[in-house]
Length: 81
Image (cartoon, rainbow, N blue to C red; front, side):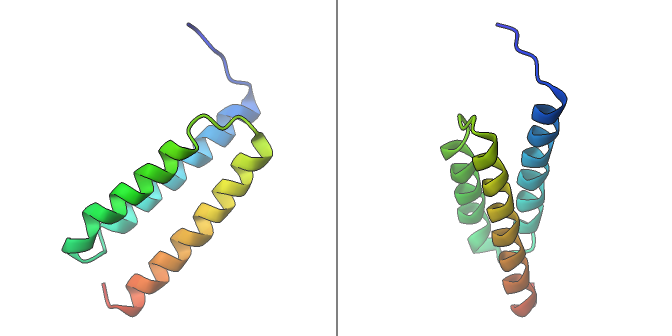
């Protein structure tokens, strides 16, 4: 099965993958005992929305994910990680 993405779909997919990579990189700063759990949660969130095709919802999920990642990053900063 071959499918093609138009430019908007391609860019949206790239944003999702970028968010995923950023989230996984951020987990490296977490305490060792929390890293596996954080990675599991991130992966589960991605899997839960894997088949979403509503572009507006995807944009919302990206925005929400970026906000949550920012809060995680700030929490890790406060903990000195």
